[in-house]
Length: 254
Image (tube, rainbow, N blue to C red; front, side, top):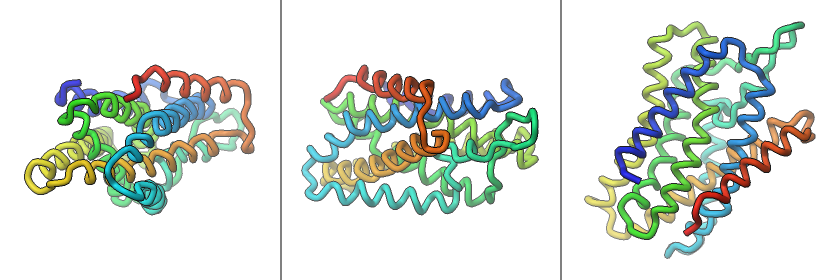
């Protein structure tokens, strides 16, 4: 996949998904939960099918340490974001009669942007490996698809928070645009580092991929647990999860 095309798709997936809030004035919590369930199942499946094997097949010993670091790092980032990476706003449905919209938690805008941008920036850093190393294109495709599917509900929730806080549309889209450039920026920084400063690129890739896999595992498992009604699965949720896993199998493995 061409680098510029990848960045283009990553950027506009976020912009389009965030814009969807204006097409659906009343957010349906059940629909949002199903979208989150699909994204969580898909993310978890590609992590185990493609990304985890890549981490442990690398030259770096004790790669699991970096997966654990990524998992813990995501916990720290959620102190700032309040968990919107896994659509935490769905848990705050309005209890008033006949009001079926989703009301998102109040989050400090600066802290939210710092947390979500760091999250997105890190996700983009391993992308450069598949772009520049022959034989690793499938890893790039898997990671790119995971990020895209993951970012769709995040963008919707993020823009919802901006609008519900009374922020203007212009400022909301500016902040959404900042978030949208973070993944390409992470990839570009990795490219710069690999060409100018890093001599053992394989070890660097194993480290950063391990951290991202840890982030993915935390986010995906949080989604699958939090979107269930009283921690029980109904048939729609179960089918949606199976669909997300099945589609992940369509991505070629390395």
